[in-house]
Image 1 (cartoon, one colour):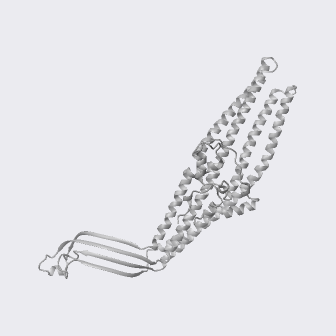
Image 2 (cartoon, helix red, strand yellow; image 1 turned 180 degrees about the vertical axis):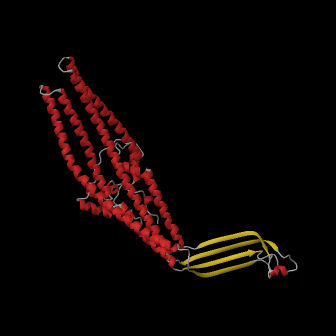
Image 3 (cartoon, helix red, strand yellow; image 1 turned 90 degrees about the vertical axis):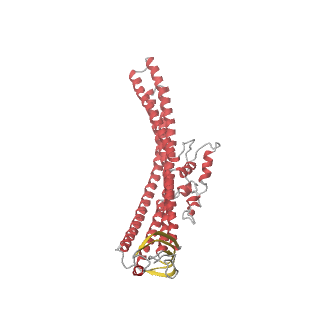
Length: 455
């Protein structure tokens, strides 16, 4: 059974269903779930990780081949020149005889005992494949988080363009009013110059916003493989979010796929170390050899069967071998396996620390972004009230148009900051789901069936 099939049980929407929904003309918006599903199907990083996993899976069959018999056929033909006492005593022949030698044979080898090498190599291959499978899931989780970031960036960039367009409209309106006042002699030329400069800045802000939107759309295509269409702000699954930092760390340590991969790597390294000990034990094989040779040793196979050069033999042997010396390779291999095990354990410890660190940083970001957003929203409300008050005061000549313009600028910047912080706060929640290994589950995106282990 697949090592990640249990993880898949909480996911509801298969990738193919989401892709069909995405391509349907009846769909009015492209959800985050659809974007993630599309990326999992098409992104080269996912395909690369999948190919690496399937490659490691074939190593299991390669290791299991050690349990099965090996059958070889051999054949040969060539020229043999012989000189032996029997040939030299034969008065009918020269001192040397040259004949065309022919050989044909079959050999069968069945392993009976190999020091448990095959057992451990199979265990090693299985756990290495498990590690690659968990790595594939981790790559998918991380890719889903990147898609989420890009998805939110496009939404923010699009809304910033709208804010910049509205801000430019307000600047143009005030510029026209001040220009009219100046032409009527009611305002100074310096006021016109000042507003003209701010209008130029508003135009530059709009162009910058449009440029940023174009960049974010390009990044979306790179990530998802399709242009963004009718995106909408997503809502993270609150039910899967941890209730405290300790809870977040506990869930992350229990679920994070990179930790699962590292744990499988340790088991694989232990198996490799045990396999290296097989060199200390004898091996036993059941061997069968059948051979037919013709024109051997200068004897013509076409001659009398009593003296001819044709021979046949078949052997069935239970053969034991024990290596006494091979140049120190076995000792080096055992040391190498021991260091590989240390490497795997330290890698697991490093990932353990990274997961705890990521969970802590993400929890803090989620906590403080939420608090920041409250104050930023207060700023937006205050800036909105100020703008409205300034407009009212301008109508009774208590404020100038420049005062109103300053209030408009402050409101624009406050709304832009609030929009970005809102997206950051949403992203922090998705990042927390990623850190705890639950992002794909929260999106109800199921893994493709070919990601499961072959039986």
